[in-house]
Image 1: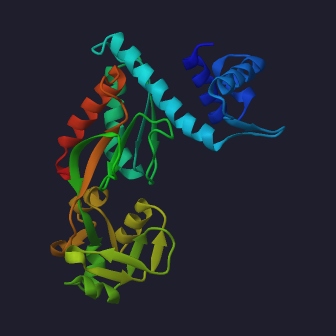
Image 2 (image 1 turned 90 degrees about the vertical axis):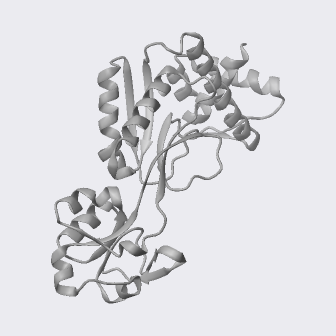
Image 3 (image 1 turned 90 degrees about the horizontal axis):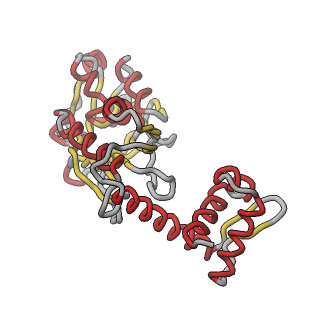
Amino acid sequence: MDRLHLMAVFVAVAEEQGFAGAARRLGMSPPAVTRAVFALEERLGVKLLTRTTRYVRVTDAGQRYLTDARRIIQEVDEADDAASGINGQPKGHLAVTAPVLFGRLHVLPGIVDYLQRYPDMEVSAVFLDRVVNLLEEGLDVGIRIGELPDSSMNAIRVGSIRRVVCAAPQYLAVHGLPMTPMELAGHSVVSASAVTPVVDWKFANGQVVRVKPKLTVSSNCSAIAAAVQGLGITRLLSYQVAPFVETGQLQIILAAFEPERLPIHVLHREGRAASAKVRTFVDMIVARLRSEPILQ
């Protein structure tokens, strides 16, 4: 059998964790899928999958091969796209990820423009407040806030944002305006983070202030809502609170003590010859984000 076909079948079985699911995904019969995986294992001389009556799991050797197989299949797809015309009209499916609020405010409008410009495209927008591995989760493009670890991904810097401390004017009128980070100990704090009894806020020059939140919430939107209602002081990213600062519902404080700005990058995992769908989306979203003053 064709080696690339065997790889594709193995990847489908590993991702579906079963032969029946892989067969449905590939439009093959379960026996044909089983024969393909067996042929691949025979060719390689290693066991790629552990099979029981209840489940199929990838072995250690299979996990390493799975990573390589995904990369090889992707590179072949890229080559096909390039050969068919890198300047061709993009078509197909694109998967994009970004932080939740950033995605809704700054990425989703770009996705809508992209789909209106290229009607043959479909996009899955995965907005999550966690670091997403594009390769492992089958995503094409990611928008990442913060310093990047060493990676083989292509990264394009599009701007930066601030970590800001803010509160509602009515709260500050009653409780006073803190002039230094150390004065936060005497204030009501709203924390948007994991539920912990204490939270460390880092400021310029390596200064760290440990605050004990009056309210801890799991979403940035909830922290903003509580702060707007005057419950206390919160710390978020500048783009998250910008609309409320503009309307006067929130006021930024301790600006002189802010740490270094956080970079924003657009990441993609395409190789030297980017497919039309990725290239056109990346070009559009990079230009769009670089044009937004709040991100510069």
